[in-house]
Image 1 (cartoon, chains in turn green, cyan):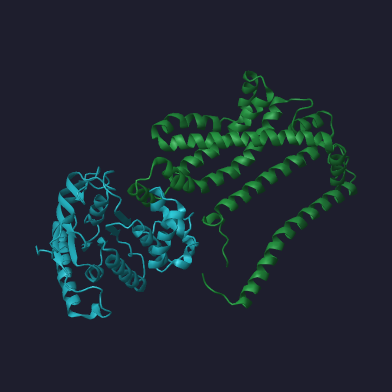
Image 2 (cartoon, rainbow over the protein chains, first blue to last red; image 1 turned 90 degrees about the horizontal axis):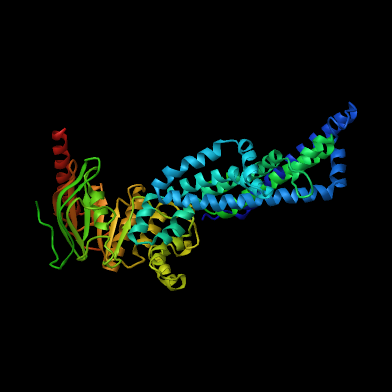
Length: 277
Length: 267
């Protein structure tokens, strides 16, 4: 709410612009240099491509196998997104029930913890035996991994509403629904967004790990199957290409959830507010 | 015990032999009886632990009485039969950080089922009264401590309450801001014909604001004195320099010191 002189403002803006550009340019440069060093070392030492392929070869493979890799990526994307959506729906719903009742929380939280602490690799074979549809089985595995952070953060978030504000809502005789909508949900939002960032990454890990365990082959399979398949056939460049796509997917999920978090919390929550020095 | 000045009108608040004991066994309020007439500005003054905030919360219906009875305008506090005419200002501004100033002030009306369009003129009116018209779209974090407290006060008066309960609202503010807000509260009290109960631990603040100071002592929390404060409203600019004011401060200080003295002997 302070008025600054325009001169100072434009100077600050200029500096901020440079800062923003640097934030993009520096990591890009570092990655390009790393790739060039990699390419140079592989060529100089004539490392065979079945041990470590050069980035250029990986790029060629990516282009050559584009259609098969793309369809696999779409499968993994679908699996990850669906499991994340289920994790959000399940986690938020159960979180709300837990936040409403200590008794329910005490009774059922251990189950959630057991699901969380048991490695998905260890549960996956069982799920694959019991659930006949492979996609559903994979979905369940990925869901188990992604669901816990959403649940536990939603519970904490719903409980974190300011006690004076709770009193205020009581004084004005808010209905339970009003309390949830205008007080508890906004209070829980920062916790939920933090959980979403974690769960997004975990859903991808869950999807990939589950597919590894399932060891599925054939047309309708994901990137993990491409990696397995390439490893059996000793097609190392293709393995790297699939791995690259998995990483890209992870980065996109991270950027998307971060962007969403800033969009939702940017105006009011400490974690997302940009401060001027 | 000195008798407080009465205006002769029907008491708005009737507190009869009220006790409050917490689950821990601590007696926060012991045998409190008090009646407060419509239109009074009453301060609850006392050291920490004297039950002044607890008493305020019981009047608001935010805390239950262990024994005795409280009626506000003939109803038990917090009962759904009573009209929505009690407002509360907390020690902290207690604003929703995710909502704009407008939405924070609109909250009580929204909870009462009023649409934004219906409420807008009223919200703008009270924002103007606390001098924050320009900040309707701002978020709480963009405001100073004093401005946040003004928003909190605007939110309290937006429902046109009869009774305004204030729990050490200005304790965290600097003195200049506090003096200014004191005058704002007095102005709103007169303009709206409010009844105010103001909890404070400052002798000077209580004498400046109120026409009646209820002095309380700790362990157990109880009323030890009830002092009428002379002096006309609105307070003159030099009110703090008048003999009337300094004498009242002395009387109230003495009463407060006695409670502290007793407290020392008890330990």
